[in-house]
Amino acid sequence: MKTILYIDGFNFYYGACRRFSIRWVNPLKLAQLLLPNCEIARVRYFSAIIKSDPSDPQKVGRQHTYLRALKTLPAIDIEMGAFLQSVKSMPRYPLSDPVEKVDVLKTEEKGSDVNIATALLLDAFDNAMECAVLITNDSDLAGPVRVVRSRFAKTVGLINPQKRPSRVLSEIVDFTRQVRRGVLEASQFPNALEDVNGPFHKPPIW
View 1 (cartoon, rainbow, N blue to C red):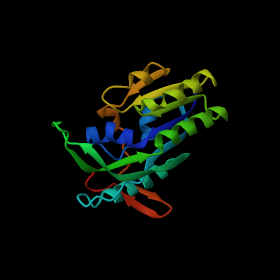
View 2: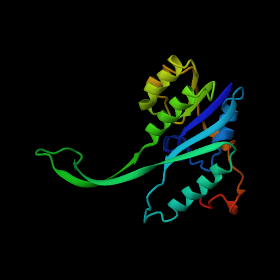
View 3: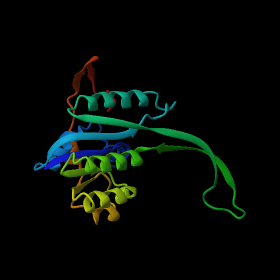
View 4: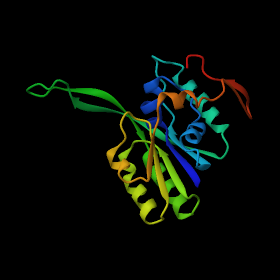
């Protein structure tokens, strides 16, 4: 089936890559290994540019390098949301009586789930695929998944990067696959790559 792969970048990173300490993953290769009978016609990757972190000054650079690696894939669209930081007053844990509140710096990613839902629905409306496969475990996407299956009669699959799949999503998709250590190890980009800006390498601490 003609398939489009939709990747929730942070869900994939924190659920699988960071959990197994295996970065530098080629998501197209991972999908081809898990879905050998699907023709991956397009990859859509959704994420956000991370904020600089004094405790890890190379963090932003590593993300930039990984995005360069992703852009070497054929037929890929990368759509970036944003990180918002704000100071929130929240109860200190464990709770006391009276409740003591402290100010915390809260960082939130904004946009990815809405962007995924929009792209999924538009691709179904445009008849751009027969099958949509999502790499995520975000149950907020249940609504558009239901519409794509019921209104547009598309097959929808789930590649779960977390330890346990979302029960909400698992119950409404046509099939599920689980990301495990072995398939991540088998889905690495080459250490050395080249793009229009020249050669580059996998970050050394990865």
